[in-house]
Image (cartoon, rainbow, N blue to C red; front, side, top):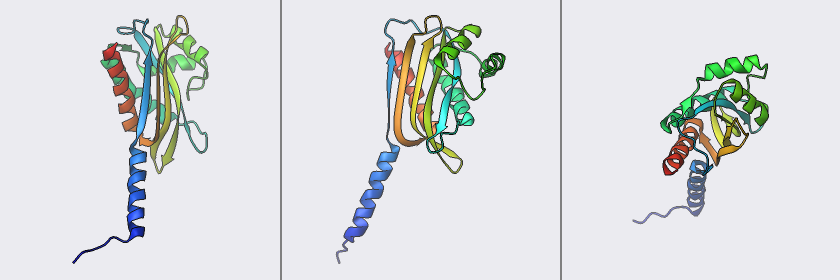
Length: 181
């Protein structure tokens, strides 16, 4: 006896599969300055301006998780990463908001005070479902504090991947690109 699938159920099933596929996709693009010698340099990951996509509220905990999560990837690339707590002390000295750097110029000032060659900063949009953040867009930049030149850019867009997955995607993209350089 043959069983047939109701066309309506078939279409619902197809739409669900398509939605799962779209939600699992994310893509990142990494650009690294070809003339800059980056490895073995001292860097500071100064934070990210991560915001809730609906309310535009700053998400400090998400920013901190990204900063801590990406540190290991920069260490794997041969950078000397300054401890986040030391950066926070400098931020307090500069009397900036501890929720993030306000501008690239202020980030460069912070890098000079911290005696690092590069600062890593950026921004992104997140949707929080329950207590879990899902990243939709993320931009990371590495800036030379001596001349203000952006030497690395990583743009990531997706339709809502978990924070840990996005950190891993971005980190692996950075490591892969440094290996090619």
